[in-house]
Structures are given as C-alpha cells and as structure tokens.
Image 1 (cartoon, rainbow, N blue to C red):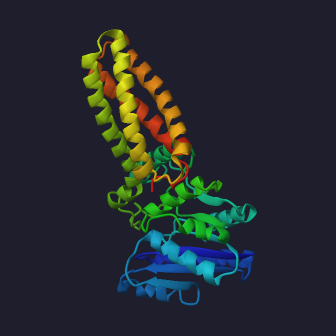
Image 2 (image 1 turned 30 degrees about the horizontal axis):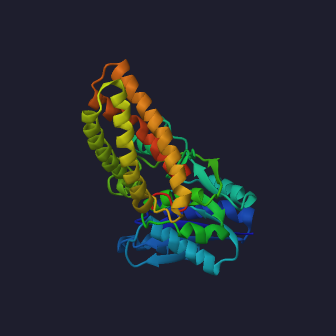
Image 3 (image 1 turned 45 degrees about the vertical axis):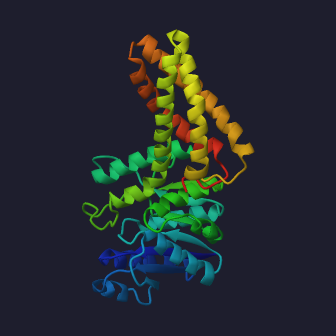
Length: 353
C-alpha cells in the first residue's frame, strides 16, 4: 500500500518545516519508502520562498501562481495523487503544526482498515483547555447546524486532518468550493452519497492564539453558511406569504374554529410556494416531482399538525396575542422542517448546492 500525505500551504512559517521533518522521522521507520509528502504552495508571497526551499528533496512541491484558496489547493493535490501515484491511502493535514505525526498515522491506519470511509481526525473542544474562544464557539455552532441539516453528528466539521483511499478522490473533487467552505461541502457530499464517516480522536493543538490560521471568521463563515442561508431565506419568504394569507383568512373566519381554518388555508398556499423554491433553488433536486412531492406533502402535514398545536397552546393556553403567537410558532417549527427537507424530502440533488 502506498501512502500520500497532502498539505496545502499558504504563507507558511517554520511550523511547516517542523511538520515535514517530524512526519519523515515518524513515518519512514513505520512505512518505509512507501509514502510521499505532497505540498501545495497556494500562491504564497516571495518571502516564503526560503520555507519551501528548505523542503526540497523532502516533499513533492506543487505551486499555484496566485492564492486560490484551501479547497483549490486540496483539489490540486488530490488530482496530482490521482494521476501520478499508485492506489494509496491519502491523508490531508494542515501546514501549521497542529496535527501531530502520531495522529496522522492513526488516521492512515483507520483509512487503510476501512477503504470505503472518510476518516476525520476529531479534536475535543473544551473551554479552559487552551482552545481559543473563537474556535470553540465556531465549532459548537457548526456542529449543531450540521446535525440539524444532515441528521449526522460530526464532532469536528472543520478539521483539516482527513484520510481516505484514493478511489474516493473523484467523488471528493465533485464537492463545490475553493476556500474553507470546500471542507464543509466535502462532508455534505459524502453524506449524500452514502459514504461512511469515521472519527478518530486526536490531540487538540493550538499555537499561541492560533495566529497561523488564515481562516477569516467573517468571509469564510459566510462561504460555509451561505448555502444554509438560502434555506433560511426561502423559509422567510414562505413565512411572509403564510403570514399575509393567515392575516387575510383570519378576517374571514372567526372564533376557535377560525384559527384552525385560517392556519390550514394559509399553510396550503405557502407550502406550495415553499416546495417550488426549495426544490429548484435551495436543494436543486433533480429528481422527479413524483418522488419528492409526496414526501413534502407528508412532511407538510406533520408540520401543519405541529404548527396548529403550538399555535393553540400559545394563543388559547397561554394567552399570547394571535399574530405574535404565529411568529413564535413559525420559529419553533423552522429547524424541524429544515432538517427533514434535507434528510427526507430532497434526496436527488447535492445538499445546499
């Protein structure tokens, strides 16, 4: 078996040299000459030239003329491995020294034993253990959003330490994105395709306050979440349609039964609107309507029952004004509807493409 270690690098420091040297010392005794380290210089400035020069003879160096993003660098490296390396176990690692050789080796072993899986080196995020607050909060929020959107619990969706058999490369390269969003899209892609995900616990290492990271919390968080935001915008627009229709029908129907009738008629109209938007613009489901529409209708019925029950409880049980109760109700059922549409209804397209 051949082993390929892929490291994307942008503006690296001495940590990259130390990472390569440590990997060489660890792997050469265990893997012999059956491994290759592939480094992608993602358009780093000229002052980083000495870092890459120090790696001459230690690794295969690929270079982007300009910075294209971490996702693009990973794709360049995977394409090289696909073309020029024999079938192998591939492991991707970061250039900042946060992935220890022993953890890289453990991920290699796991991927070798299960060649159909994507292996993730999973860090533990605990406050007070040296983890920067930005990283802790970012991970926990993303972990929750990912669970709701896929039904899969992945403890470290942002880990750069991943291992897989090279036969998975064509599938992984189909995931969209050229920057940090690529790693999230990669996970969404393999889950949709039924590729199992394995998690291997690794040591959580941060250098100082994580200054070496080039993750921009504003730009790259938007790139990661923008596809999720499309669903939120769809739901908001559908809510506006539903709210207007509910207000209109509540003028026509009065009394206790009027609340239910108004809610049902408004929901039917907004559900049809929401189905078309989500099918064509959010999930880009390319399956027949005969497949997704019955499932959407079943989900809509469940949501309607849940929606009406909560609305009655808030309005008649707790005395909350009707229109305010409607807003609260929609917020409660939003996450449930979101996750069920992604997991259950629209299964013939890439999630959040």
